[in-house]
Image 1 (cartoon, rainbow, N blue to C red):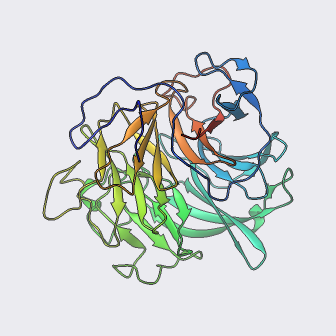
Image 2: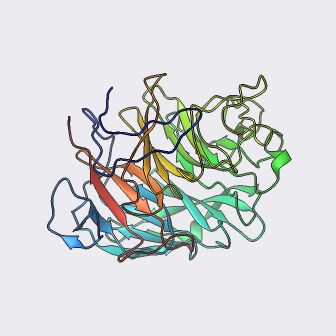
Image 3: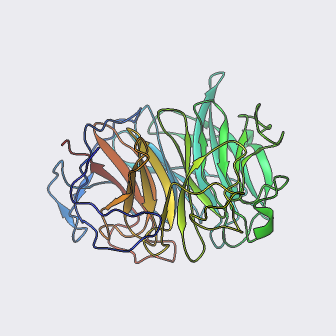
Length: 378
């Protein structure tokens, strides 16, 4: 796959000029994404309303408060988590915004609060899973999602704790959750400042966890525990390629952010190694960036190209996972500010969740927003 007008980065990054414009990916299609009525088109330079055009970003949701995760719904619309107030916002199939409810027990502060969302139906019940900070830990809970599209609500009376005891701190809390192709729930955690615990397989800090939908250690886990991989500093993105391989984005410290190809039982080296170390006792990342260029959060996989939403870097990084020699390239640098999450959208589009209202970004008119961006052919 070749791409014109992009910036490449390798094991040793040199920051360069970044193409600002719409990305061009050959023959991209989307996996199961809902139809959503278009909202207001947003001009890429000013963020002001303009006429709707397929090549321009479209604001599907706006005026969100520290949003963290977007969960598209097959019936239409989406659910969006707000970190600081614990609220779930429903984007209806008609393009309206409404509150679906507040997740009980959310204690926000620092980088913790209501974070990742996932959905699974079992025996006729739609369970909404949520990762959140509690009084003394991070945990995953689930509750039935009741009602029809446009009137969704959280059945908090039936809330269940799936997994608790994940270390919590003011930062490095991880927070992404997703169901894998195997039907198991994967949970991204941070080291919560407990650096030496990241490589200890008996700790939940600095890990990717794999559990059953009920929260038990998944069959086949390498340590007969919830731990699936270790040696992570702060994982915030999870996605699978067409071969069922898990990829994860990870915040580095001062030198290298990482995109890792995850293996069961794999040790990714933190805190002893950061970036590409060539060490015998750790797995090197597939790609690295300086924190100023990335600070990666949510990721999406579209036609085996991984899309990485970047916070401090304020851009999307893309990598063709089918080419072992491919290097990342960047698009949409600086257009929308900090980017927290990215997911496939319908009909040749993808969605990006901005993150300019959490105290670290420069808020723009209408922020924070869920934007729909087009994947032009060619």
